[in-house]
Image 1 (cartoon, rainbow, N blue to C red):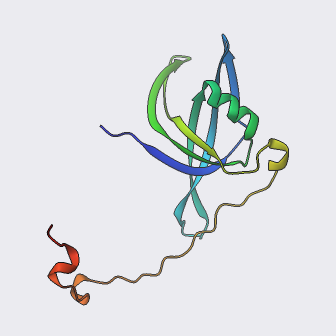
Image 2 (image 1 turned 135 degrees about the vertical axis):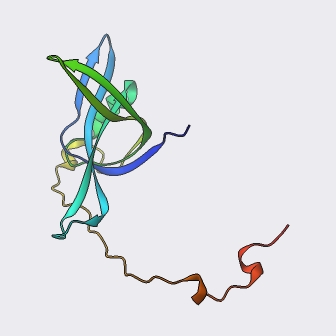
Length: 142
C-alpha cells in the first residue's frame, strides 16, 4: 500500500517539545491553504498535526516557531486513546523529511503572515473534439 503525504504550510503555534530518557519528540500543527476559496472568497485551510523524533525534533525546536513556512513529507498515521472514559481518534503526519523555508533562526522569523493568495483559474474547458491531433502525436511506438 502507498501512504505518502507532501505538504507546504505554516505552523499555527510554536512546536511542543517533549523529552523522555534523552529522546526528543516535537509535535505541531501546520495550516495548509487549499486551492480555492469559500463562498465569501475567504481562503480555506486544512490543519494537519505533525510529529517528529530525535535529531529532527531538535532541529524543529531550534529553527521553527509560529508562522514558520515548512515543507514536509511523511506518512499519515491514525491512533486512538482513552481519556476520562472517552475514546479519542487522532490522525497525524509522521515526518520523514522537513524543509525549513523561513529564515534560519527564530529571532529572524517573527513575521506576520496572511494565507497565500489564491489565483482564480479561468474556466477554459476544451473538448478533445476541438483539438487536432494526429495519431502519432500521442504515442510513438518504439
